[in-house]
Length: 356
Ligand code: KG4
Ligand code: ZN
Image 1 (cartoon, rainbow, N blue to C red):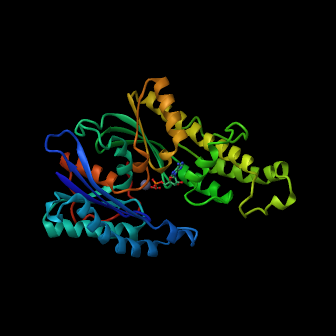
Image 2 (image 1 turned 90 degrees about the horizontal axis):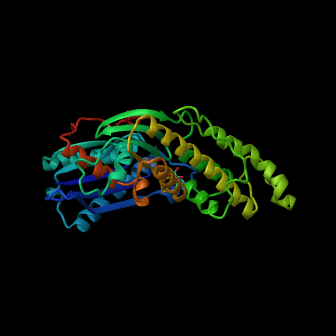
Image 3 (image 1 turned 180 degrees about the vertical axis):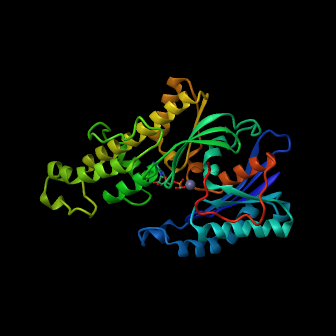
């Protein structure tokens, strides 16, 4: 069984082909192509939807060609066509979904509309040999640039929301704080890089809403904003190094490393504590973490340790699968196809599509 998937929810164009082995011993990723538009949008200071959708239209046919060549397969040999149907930018979602629908109609094959968040949520199971039974009950943290959600997963398509952010997503907080510090987008990897040599205990930053199952990260971001002028005053040696508020602050390399480490630690503490508390409450044996922020090595390490200490199994997708890609959409598609799910080609994209 072979699924071809397109992911065009934001500014990354992805095409992947995943084949389930005939002996049910797992699946093989035959191709996973991705084209990033980050450099194009960076000069505008954010994603420009019209440019993103135009580029998807240019890249998607090329990636389809590359993916089928890499997989040594003709489109007529694909068993189902999947695409992200939301959440995301309407004009971007429309491109991938329209192409997948066109292929499904043209080749008389099923169409699968996949929720982007389900793609992330299931990605920790990617590559497991026995995919039929692998979606066992777990508490899942989906933590990306647009979402921070804790979900009780009972099985495929059986999800219950435990908590979500009431303001910024964790990845958004990384991106906004990075911007204040004059670091590049996306901020997560930039902050992580500097945090490696920093002291996470140097600056005392807030851990908000610890008694709730929901998350809040805007207070942490504001705390960094208020701290910055004080740090510049206290630690930077020459007045030249001071910057006016609103512009990125230029900090001494060591102070910057300590601030990045302290900020990163505040986010990790909250994510790990709430996830472990939820896993205890819902009495699951497994914790899973997915989404772009879960590329963070310190987050992965802390989760691994906390789960081992508290007696939970822990699954985290490989870093290349954590940020947006089409392989996770193909995987969710394959599981859905095996589970007997299919979508109508009349199913519309939904920029605000909810998972639960
Ligand atoms: O899942 P993703 O690629 O896109 C969304 O669906 O949002 O996540 C992107 C987010 C960005 O906010 C980025 O800063 C964050 O993931 N991110 C990280 C790291 N790598 C990416 N955050 C912390 N540490 C990282 N290493
Ligand atoms: Zn995503």
